[in-house]
Image 1 (cartoon, rainbow, N blue to C red):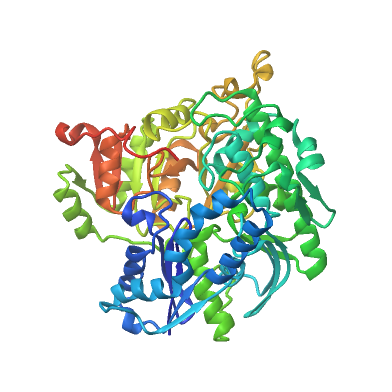
Image 2 (tube, rainbow, N blue to C red):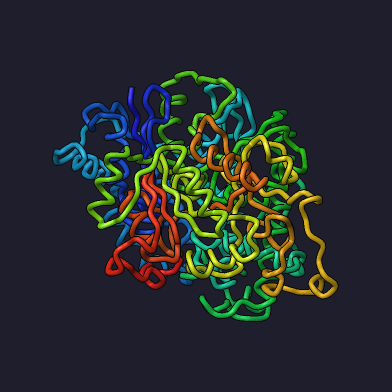
Amino acid sequence: MRILGISAFYHDSAAALVEDGVIVAAAQEERFTRKKHDAAFPAEAAAYCLAAAECDMADIDHVVFYDKPFLKFERLLETYLATTPRGFRSFRMAMPLWIKEKLFQKKLLRSQLGKLAGSKEWSGSLLFTEHHLAHAASAFFPSPFQSAAVLTMDGVGEWCTTSLGHGRDNDLEILKEIRFPHSLGLLYSAFTYYTGFKVNSGEYKVMGLAPYGRPQFAQKILDHLIDLKEDGSFRLDQRYFDYCAGLTMTSPAFHRLFGAEPRKPESPLTRREMDLAASIQAVTEEVVLRLARYARQETGERRLCLAGGVALNCVANGKLLREGIFDDIWIQPAAGDAGGAVGAALAAWHGYLGHGRVLDGRDRMAGAFLGPGFDQRDIEKRLSAAGAVYTVLDDDAVIARTVDALVDDKAVGWMQGRMEFGPRALGGRSILGDPRSPTMQKTLNLKVKYRESFRPFAPSVRREDVAEWFDIDADSPYMLLVADVLDRRKLPLGPNEADLFGIDRLNVPRSEIPAVTHVDYSARVQTVHPDTNPRYWALLSAFKQRTGCPVLVNTSFNVRGEPIVCTPQDAFHCFMGTEIECLVVGNCFLRKEDQPSHLRQDYKDRFALD
């Protein structure tokens, strides 16, 4: 039996295909259309999923959408009525789209699915699941746990913004909910907006900025914005927000409370933004910890599953793991809306159809390598058509040449195997560097990624070596846990360096691996496992043999505002538009100096800033 899951029409559209309970393929639409956070119906992602399963729409038994549009419309109407007349402007802008399109999503979905099937309209089984149930299903059903507490936290689905569920075998029950407009995700997004970053895109920048500041506004947030209870439940004082009735996230009362208007995007960052970021991060961590304690108490479970956009806050996740509230935590790698496609399909398979789960101690996400892959012949054909000059090497030589480039302090584009599902590059579509280099972090940010200089990079490390370098001894295959660098790997600060503040702290080497050590000595750790990514594990092994260090800098293969590369052509174009010095695609090795000069591009201003 085949089930196609769909998430679409809000942000990060995606498709996923489940065959007899196994996730065969999953991908975000943005990777094909090259439009960041593409919200359109995921036609190309769905077509890929069908091709990966070697089937067509006639072979699909059920299509499941990750949302219930009428419930969402009900929430919008009730919100506009509750805030009238102040909310009329927002109502006037939203209603034409809903009346023309979104209110009739069932018809729209059948029409789009019909195009995939080569007909006017698809007449098969079309199901709808609630948004937070899809999130919860994406967290629990692929997890390695027979039973677990399940927390989902995001901006808003239909009405729900936070849910506590309990999963046992193939049964998943939602026990408690927090409902709109009270939302941890929207609270964090309000500070994303206020500090000058883009909502639904820049939240991870706030998280990355937080260690540069001090949480001096945290108490003010708790005193005025959020009424937080001991069990993690909360209410937001709507006087300080504008997302219900207006077109922005924060209100004039919010601006008065914090003493200024929102920062203009792309303007210089000040100590104030850093302190605001540190403050909302501290409050978020406290909310998550209280919710987790209540989940443990309410369910009696010793294991926890997480999903929803807030579950991508790897700093909060790392703190939750260290607190020891649960013995084990599993986080859906595509925790945001894209993962709703997987959750919707699995909710149908296990919940609606009642099928059991397969448990063997491993999760069912296949390392998140669920996107398109390309065989060697296809890679060579595509690179040649793009005009690339490359050398084909055997497996051992590919690893050796890549290690040579890394040791020479070069940035390496690395495209191998299937593309990752979710926002993190995990060694399938990555840019790699030597973590021992004191200049690599700044070079990658400013000359390769064309993004803000404060942004940290993640370390990839062999699973068996992680406890030798970081204060963690657990699986973190999806780069969703933050841990400190071990004390013995840290470098002492000079007498003047300890007093530096903000961005001035960026250029101070803090450990033996400064390129992946954040200013607070933390790192967003990815453990690499030979069973899910054997070639990347082999590269780390070879780098360790050469240097004694089993760690590499790993950042996503794209520039700011660009989706992660999908195809060999995407990889080559990004390589030619940036200062990446070497590119490895399959067994093809490319050096920048060998490429035709007329193929050089300028990627710096090619994509809209996110």
